[in-house]
Image (cartoon, rainbow, N blue to C red):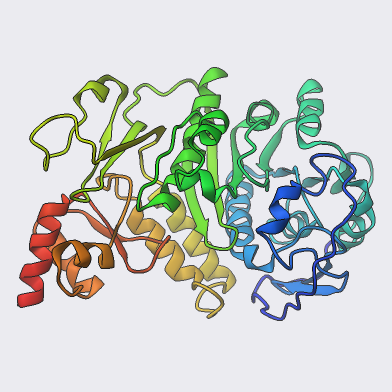
Length: 431
């Protein structure tokens, strides 16, 4: 049934040409026109590309080879689901050229993939790419190509009780209008792979936009890229609660190109029994200390560096997801699968083994939201920055939790207050 295609290597042999802007036949077809000014050299000429030994064409679809790592993570998750549950039905709601759909079919061995893209002008390139896998007929059909708005595709499947085990929504900007339809079309216990590319909102520059999209009023903070992931998860948490569901983040991934925020969620029936993982994040611009607050603690906001509870230096964002960004045991399974497939130690971008290892570190439930950039700490303390590994060891020795951040290399996640962090740094610089 399948071609003999081995998921072993990630090719870096991509040629990107001048942008070719396709005709947009619907609001959802070519993504938003406003994205064009921020994404240069995206629409590439129709020529053969290679990803994980799979050949495909991009036509005039929106495509970024830098997003291959996010596709890797999606395929690993889909494969774990298939191995655990015995079957896998995937909806690729905004499939572009169809490379994600092809990888789910070949690498994750999905039983069925619905490749949907609102722009019917992309039908030939999607069909040609998926034709590497025999289509099948009737109940044995492996894939189908459709052209609808993502919301309509999910609503139609929900109306006929045709549920999916995994829904991948590779959207642009901060469009969250599809969340409710996605939850309805997803099988309980299934996987929802969400995307945001709205770095302006995560950076606190469009607080009313983030409020409308995710129900979170976001202010500028020095760890805005992590806030973007928590904002996205929080929006899903809120929407799921309206339907009587709750979600668990399996992993969260930030990539600088775009930027792109991707989160994999598992959906369960029943609301969360507690709200400790959904609330607010504070940051003091004066001393650099960050803290979390629940709704019933909003009247107690303050910073240890201030004599009064109210402080003009205190910035508050939320509500958003406050819990771990990843599930440690799940990411460990992903890492073992990546090793089994030979996907580690490739030297392409951030090594996948290193990425997943850092995610496991970040899963420590003691770690609060945010990270501390070593350069920022050194600037506040008016000192040179000690080595990252040495600082981590010193924090752990003092009883604090500490890990690297997959978002930014020269930063630490820790539950150590900034004042103690500076003291420990000074002590270790002198030793």
